[in-house]
Length: 313
Image (cartoon, rainbow, N blue to C red; front, side, top):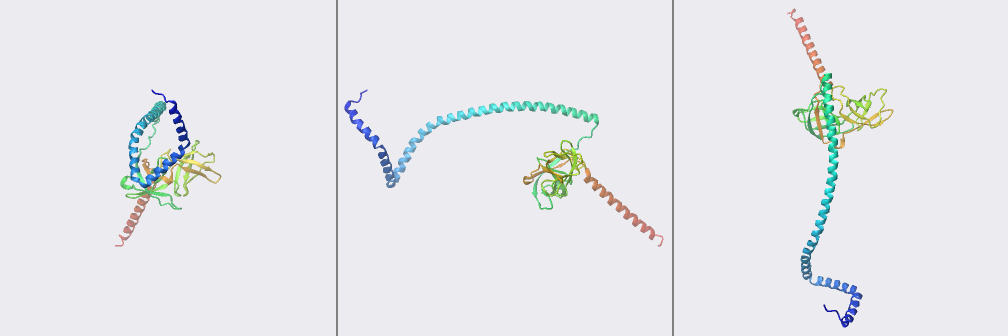
């Protein structure tokens, strides 16, 4: 390889100095020239830009492939690390669930043995129908909703209306294709309940607000905010243990309960039939007996009048 001679070096040095000194001016001039060319001959500039883009695109594609591959490898490594940690957590959770499954089976066997020993009456059966809430009358004097299921679907008066969070109310009126649900916040709602760890008995009474109150508590009841409120099973309308809410306020004048149900987002209700006769059937039986007694009295009176008119003829 030939080395540059002294004369060549003497010529190149002034050129390098001149280029470094006027490089900015040259770049500005070149940019200005390109702008002028773009103004005067746009087709030529567009064709040139397209050609350059076509030439550069494969190069950029070839350069980007290793980068994408490397990024994919990093993502896969992170995914494998996350999967490994999730696998460890799932194994621990599975072990805990197996432990509680064994405990639950043992308790179930003991419970069955105790039930058989005590000849305990089994809990009633349960069937349910899920219906959509199609109407909310609202207002200051009523708290009820309408659902799109009725008598033809097996809905009956007194059945419990539930959400995934807890008890919402009970069926108050039944039509052929619809039913009205009386919510636990309605002023006509009265539900026997059990409150707190002390299992104090009370009655949950609605007053058309979102926070019904507890009535008829015993004098020794000591309630705290956060105590859970569940149905007691008294009255025969609801079975015991249905979740309703928690105590939200305790004062000298009233004790308020915050239900678990989200009233603003209640779209579906599960109407549950616990096959409990309860006080509703008792009232219907009493009404039927009263009607039969009135009919018998009317027949006796008619027979007495007929007997009194017979001898006169």
